[in-house]
Length: 184
Image 1 (spheres, rainbow, N blue to C red):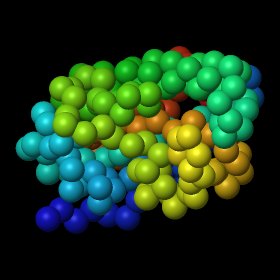
Image 2 (tube, rainbow, N blue to C red; image 1 turned 90 degrees about the vertical axis):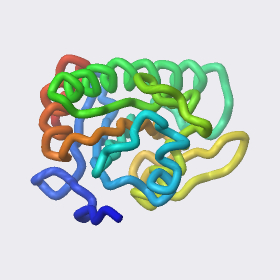
Image 3 (cartoon, rainbow, N blue to C red; image 1 turned 60 degrees about the vertical axis):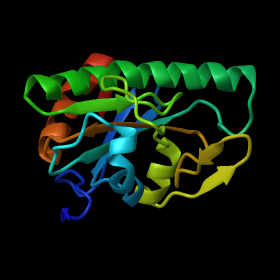
Image 4 (cartoon, helix red, strand yellow; image 1 turned 135 degrees about the vertical axis):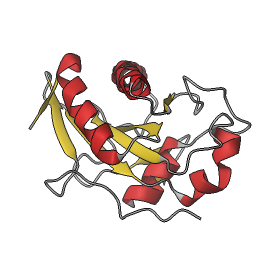
């Protein structure tokens, strides 16, 4: 059994807070895996068997819209936020891999890893954010997070890595400006 330190949140004692060029906020926090991930790691990420430690980076993007209803605008916004995460997440994952750390991002739409073989079960980003950040969830056609400031205007995404949290944080901060995210 691995013993992880408490949730790793940057030196300032809060998540990495970023803002995009449109003024929409982005928060990144790094955590030990949830109990569900620990119990189902090989079913979610079958290639990941030898890692002593695994870290979960939660990337929350503020949406222009509350994500409770399924409208054309909401679906377009979700796709825009997914694409933004996929670009950022791939850059971060490949930078971590270049340094020798197994890393992957979870496709928010499918729940399957993008860079590893898919497992027998999908990952559930919303459930992991609920477990790790204790944010409430509204269940309608799909589960929607309730952010303490943004309400349901929040789009969750996940990167997993064996890299130590301070390396994930440092690289995330280095890569963020390339994606037009700057520190607040």
